Image (cartoon, rainbow, N blue to C red; front, top):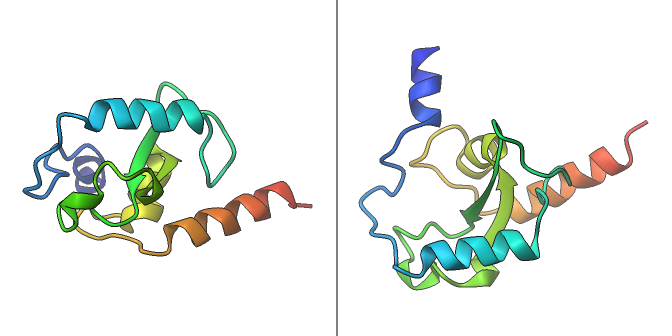
Length: 110
């Protein structure tokens, strides 16, 4: 249980990558353009806010950090589980497809 909580709030999520000074503005702009989670269609909440996820991790592809085509908006819980498979050192190259599939299932649920 404690490992799950630690991983969820792990502050060393950059894995040695250094954020660009422009990241905060790009992040805010992306959420402004896409104000709902791309996997659930829901807005963020206090305990599960929207976050911007890099499809190609910025610590491995630093030139893609600010590229809007490399970003997807997810709620924090889905960012960790769908975007990183429950480990910040992992990444999901098919996050767009997985998010679209989940959103379709939610929209068409019985």
